Length: 184
Image (cartoon, rainbow, N blue to C red; front, side):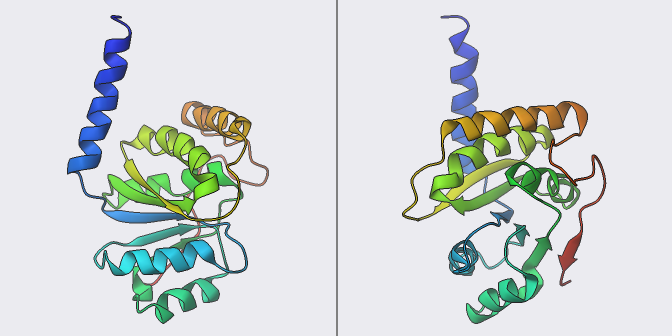
């Protein structure tokens, strides 16, 4: 019983944070299909949040991404596009220090519904390691949820990254600045 008290206190604190602390940015995990579902969903979502910067990790080529946002009436100057990531773990590790450097402590995390469990596990570890919290926003799809094994595997990779700086992904630098495309 004594061991469960800290867990319940932590869960209560997380719930309290979600109710009181507003996100300061939108973080979108790229990887949707050629129909650009995540980008289109986000473009509509951010119209209701006109002052938030939009960080997109991976995803569609820049000109297609910008076109979606412009068509939705969203200023492309709000976009921060990063193409360093090669998978879900590196979606987070390639941007977390940039987010922190911009003073961002809470984000809306947008990805497909079938991908949200794994993204949340990784986000808790990687974003959490820098004191960044998130509120998940799922893009509806008709795909079944990913196998739980992917969440376990990538959660372990995220823990290794926190401890060593190594992501386990081929072709990704251990440390270094991400390649960003911003329109400031």
